[in-house]
Image (cartoon, rainbow, N blue to C red; front, side):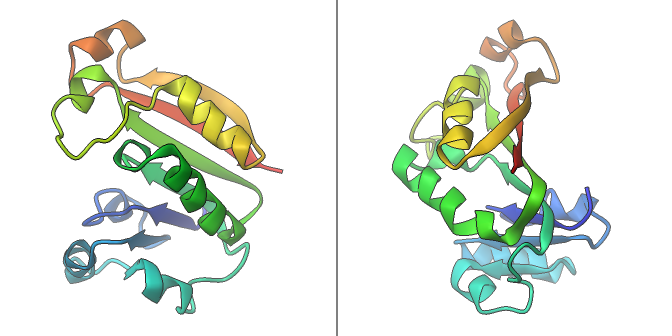
Length: 157
């Protein structure tokens, strides 16, 4: 994956698996404190933009795992617009959102974001969709299995 920017990193669930090649950003200062306490590189939104890790085109990939369903569509597009300049040309963005059973388990979800909606977000910021799929099981099980997710991978031109 190269150097990865994890937007909406929370306490660093994904960062911990990137062998020091990831930088996290989250609006929640308490989550960032936990991530940093785990030895991870993570910033609040304002701190990231002023940090040495905020280099334009400085990342090979960007992850937005369980972010899009927590904000309205216009806010989601704004987040993408805000962070895409940090992704190098040809870099990839990985979107992950819960399917129905997982969506229903979190009262902080504000909208259901399926593969069609993820595709719309990607195309709105001129990303090219590389692949879109259900993980870990076929789509039908997303109505029953709370950990089934939509995954969309897109590439910056």
